[in-house]
Image (tube, rainbow, N blue to C red; front, top):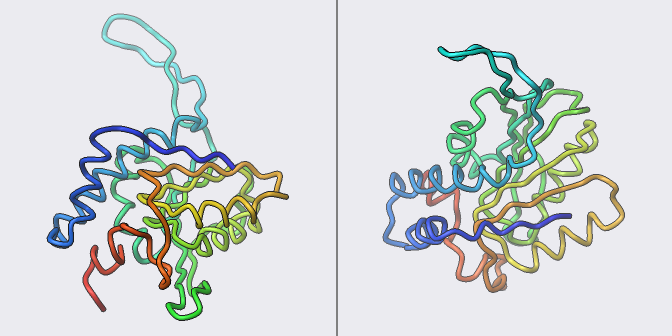
Length: 212
């Protein structure tokens, strides 16, 4: 597993305002979108491309375009939806699937309740969007779900991570031969007894869309 922390002052700046409990939902959504676009530059560094012949106003030349099959972006519902626009801005030709997962707040166990994905992900580059890598349970289950459909090239994009979540993910993937890359805005201090990242930014879903 390759963990990459995107160290950039603009990322730190936007994370500061995301963390602030005074930041309202509309501002939180805008900042999350902007932050994901910055992280997406790192996440797509190895996106597959192929040569593409064009003509400029001056002369013919060879450029590049995204290879087929197109990459697929998979936000984890519901909080991952707040990251989708920022990723699609950078990869407008990518396809989008959805994976609905929920964590039991008492047991911290994760279950899947919905999916909208192709049956076969063989040869597809998959980008998972999930704001928080806390316990790591959601991301482990999502990766297992995608690899069962044939995915062999997976990148997860998260705004924040806890060391415990990274360790759990590394342990679960230790015997896997499937390359997984995790791109993070930052690594925070720890998890608290409720499984929340400290200092973190609270419940990302609630802050994006309100308490429902």
